[in-house]
Image (cartoon, rainbow, N blue to C red):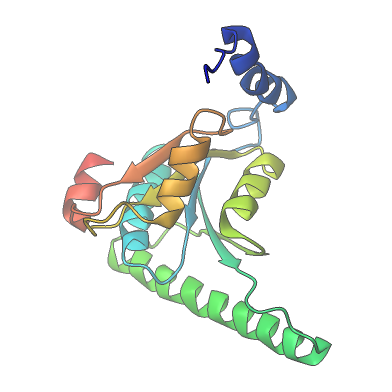
Length: 186
């Protein structure tokens, strides 16, 4: 069975349509600051992304935005159980934000006050929605895992599948770099 090749025009059409639908970023318009978005969770690579994004935000007079996504767990049959799980997720988000605030101060970014954003849903989808909604987000910063099996699920999903059509540049900070090396590069 021979497969027919699609014309190049057909292959490029979805990407071109997506580009037409995207709004222009307002990053450099008066009253706007470019935001460096970091997705925070309990993984060790988040600290690398935080260091890079904080340094870039400070050096370019931008802003740092931290996103914590509460991913859905099991389908709950009772509304009370679902509400308790949601409250626990928001409490965990606050704790993670406090932890990353301490890490920022320890790295020397006392004057940088990050915007803290909590979303509920699937991580990749919520990141994409937030970037589409907030026209000040100019860069998504992700940390890659040191694990030899791969850079991590979020990096694989966003960079692997969506890099060509993503609304903003994605910076991936290598997991093998120490904080001092990251700060020197940023």
